Length: 380
Image 1 (tube, rainbow, N blue to C red):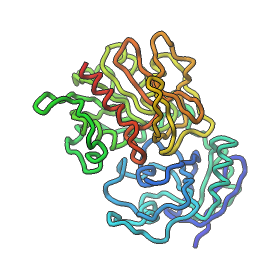
Image 2 (image 1 turned 90 degrees about the horizontal axis):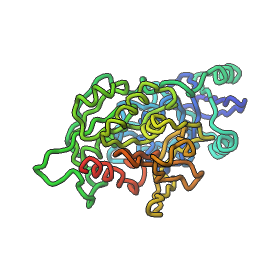
Image 3 (image 1 turned 135 degrees about the vertical axis):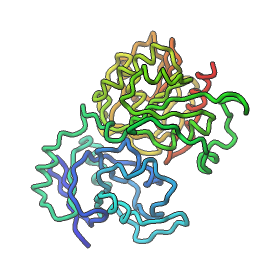
């Protein structure tokens, strides 16, 4: 077994067993509290520039399959886990996790005290880190971690957005069909024209696009730097602003486009980074959370009904609620963990947005009603 070395910017040195690619990397280390769904997590573009510390006791037991990717490649910079399963047992598996990571150049470290690391991040906040699975010294890794500029103010979206517009396939896979079983079809009865949704790809997860299509939409996906004028030329019935990585303050071109679209009055749904971009377009400010929200078990309260939903989340930044204009904005959702803003609607435009991920993958289906609200806006 090859030794791996992980060094945090505060000087902490952790050694363990290497797996995945033999390489060095530097990243922002965050912890994820999901119990399942590591393949979806590792392929989520929102994690670009970050390494994942899994709080679940072991990963790798179901391998890697061909169906559960949220993007074409693993997006994370590194994997940190207590235990890497030595055996793979799942009928859909096509490849062990370690082999898949090695194929894509992603290193991992196992046999480390993930409870200790999680507590350090909770107490001290998110940290820059460096990992070597090929013998680099701790001193060299510490220097790299401290010299790395981090994610604040950077445009990470350009690394994950599509290069040109494309139409999302209309087919609905079995997983999405099962998750929507028994739900209303807000797109209207068969034979009626399907609403056209233009989806900004800031790093969108495939399952979001699946749910838009499964709800009855015709979906056109466009690159992150598409102008508002070009989107309006597509004659959308609604505009979707996707999730994505990094700091929303690093995307002034996207904020400018969202501002124009809001004032134009086109129905709009923003999720995660899209939610933050709507906030910035309204003149609000965003701030970095101490250690972010990453996992599939975050409770969120709907202030309109009092209902509590268990949600999937993945973000390090949030819109500061106090900087939104209450005359124009209705706050609809708050986090029950830390009280941070989780959703709002505009009072004078058909715009709604949420900080959490209603599409899950992985996670519960509690919050799928957000898609129904969006389709109701387009219908109205």
